[in-house]
Image 1: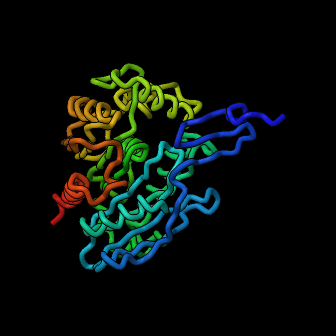
Image 2: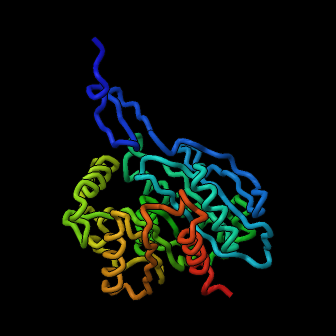
Image 3: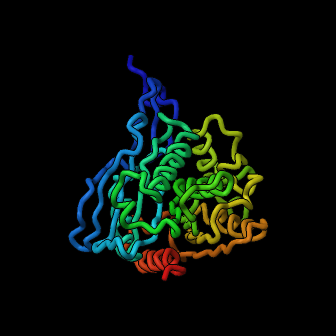
Length: 319
């Protein structure tokens, strides 16, 4: 008699991901991909590049319609969300969002396609992302091989941006910049959209949705089996002894009113402001919205407003 579906599963996150006894992974969402292109509406161009053939680390690059080597633009390094487990830099949601942001802000973007858990458990995604950041930095001199970066990027205006798990990665990359430096690059700031942070003890109204918190904490340990748990500094940044060494001077945190992770965004903003870091941290809340609503409903008023705020943040100190 064949085993039941339940007996064949060793991990299940409903509507998200399953892992079978044989080790095979079923991603239940985030599997669609789109190729790079020239967008007919905005003129934004994109292409895929391989950063490290040995690990298959790659990225998708974006430039605005009329790039000008005599007027170099800010660069954002983007880290996609998906709980470290699903989605890619080629997902339609991320591809379309980056096109919109590049067009709105008139910037250059690098969207990192890091390896995903559970096949590549954390800290692989962090290490891949750091390798991508250092690859980007190598183009601040004539040594880098990617002409879009060499010709069109102002390396004194670099930003890290990410949503959900990608926002977690963005923060941890900024911590590495603060700890180790990044030759040839000035990391001006970062944007954390609905950041996937946690902690052992509930904060704010988080305790009113314990099922959601249990899911969030369980997913973290699933993605990072060797983690110390929910208060791991990679997941609960306030526990990091290097928290105040964040390697940029301004941060924008975006939260959504109905998102379980809202409380962690506010908590991060409050604690960073009191940490002795010395930079400026701002927060923007979208009322009536849920987690990463801007990816699924990009034309709604709140999504358009947030896109404009992020674009302004990337350009506000750029002449």
